[in-house]
Length: 331
Ligand code: NAD
Ligand code: UDP
Image (tube, rainbow, N blue to C red; front, top):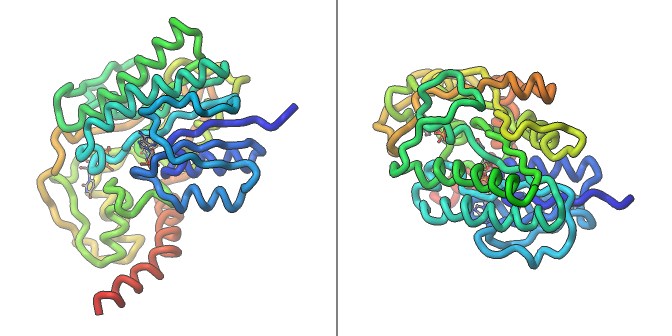
């Protein structure tokens, strides 16, 4: 039997890079479709140079028809979408289109190839949740016309599209509701909280806390998230239609700031409070992962401190040089 082949849309992004690398290490071939809008060419090039025979990257937008992809895939991972609030509020039309039009284009490929379709959904489908923690049975609390709706409603519609293709065309769609995931290779200018805090701490400028910092999130290290995504692509596994994937260790943003400052070595009061720049910031978020535990035997293994150390080490290894260069340029 030949090698297994996965299509990974958004494969030059943060999670897409780690997922692709894991599949390649397990002997898969991987085809990446990514328009590099929020991803990085370095991610794609790193994999091209390490796996020249088994990895290929196409610079393309999933909002356009994808039938030019002529090879056959066993699994199709759909990760292509702007993902950081600071990014998607600047391109709301692209964001909703990537999720509604894009997912349909990707589902057409999955149908053509009788492939498993793994859809990267999000805890944002729960909006500002009124139930806590959030289980897969909760329907969410989303403002359909708010600043975040391009993403939240886009991802909800994408889940509905996966469900529609399942019922009408028999496509095996598997939805993974990913909760806040962090780790090496998240772009420093991505805007999401872990990298923004680390960047400011390394720059020696105050961390900017939105609101009073009492809002919570539950942060999952990328290797744990990727392990769940690999399971989602396994045909042997009986995947429930929708599964939460995240780390249930809930922490306030104020405490996260303190944790980052402690690790980087900044003064513990090096923070500034500012009004949240984006409306409808969810106040609490924590996954109920009983389903993943019971049905898939999956649970996160990497604690927050350990994961932050790994992430920080990565940024230090590449940022050191660049920051000195930037500083020199200013002189
Ligand atoms: P990311 O921004 O690093 O990756 C997204 C990738 O998709 C980028 O490489 C970008 O260039 C590409 N892309 C965007 N729109 C595209 C389009 N129309 N056509 C082709 N490529 C396109 O973000 P990430 O954190 O790696 O997120 C990956 C997926 O996981 C996204 O679908 C996101 O919604 C989902 N997710 C992530 C998190 C998280 O905390 N990281 C949480 C929930 C869900
Ligand atoms: N946040 C913050 N400072 C930052 C970036 C984010 O206080 O520099 C807050 C943000 O308001 C939210 C939380 O951190 O309450 C997580 O934000 P992020 O953008 O990482 O992801 P979200 O979970 O909101 O999609």
